Amino acid sequence: MPISIVVGGQFGSEGKGKVALEIVRRSRGPITVIRVGGPNSGHTAFDHKGRRWALRQMPAASVDRNVDVVFPAGAYLDVDVLLGEIAALDYPLDRIVISPKAQVVTEQHKAWEGEAALVSSIGSTGSGVGAAVMALAARDAPNFPLKAVHALDHDLLHPFLRNVDTSLTLNDRLELGQRVVIEGSQGFGLSLLDGGYWPKATARSTTAAAALAEAGVSPRYVDDITMVLRSYPIRVAGDSGPLLGETAWEEIARRAGTELDLREYTTVTRKLRRVGEFDAALVRRALAANAPHRLVLNHLDYVGPRSSLEMSDGPVRQFITRVEREIGHCIDWYGFSRDGIVSATNQTA
Image (cartoon, rainbow, N blue to C red; front, top):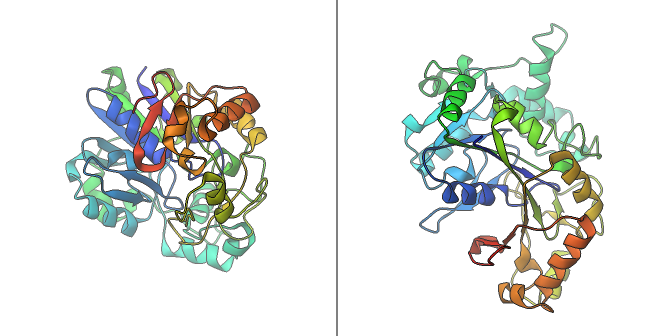
């Protein structure tokens, strides 16, 4: 049952790409990585040479250039962004497959979102994904102004279609016991159906079940669901919705006893992110919706130095203990920005 799904438990930017890459590196045999969602969020990871990549279309779990990449029918593609990332990574073209039914985000979709003032009203990135979702659901209705465009309809994507049904291709690999990693996007608090913050939400559902449906594979094969959290959740700039205990980046740095500039900016719009306190109630709802096998807590260096993880009275260990008590679930992996992942069982990278 070799499917791994990685999802976020807050408002995105939890470090899902880094965790998906970690799962790939800890796996054996041929691996296929699926990126669902669209270019309205970025995933960051460091490749085996230490180079940092912030990607909006290619999965972060592909930065070592050693996995097959599939964009299923549930993917939303900005062709310019995708081709730019493929070129920057110098990715082997024969290892990328795009479903003919995948959606293309057009300039018309982006323009519609701009005219709809979604950037100012809900904090949307204005990348056109929401409009593309609406166009697909409208099914060419004559009274709706936007049209859905499929990968099959875009000439520049034809070399990646390979005349295959990606669901059948993935099923064949799963039957052979090959690992498939689905890299989800955004976080539970942004989920359209169940996040609880509509209309301050994204245009899709962001749970593990939704990612699986967008990937076009059966739940029978799932044996590994990972939900990723961060020590201090973020939301994008502007009127993007409630954020418990909203605070300043400078205050977080003061608590952590660091002089480093911790300010974060969104990958797509380059605007300063809002940051708040850890929200246990949100995470408990995310746990209920996703029932993960593994829970990851990232950005612990925002709490204190990695050395304090092994100190019972250290700030990092005390923070983890408090979080576990409040959410009623143990943390399995700890993350310290680019320093890699520490397993709770042995506390070694």
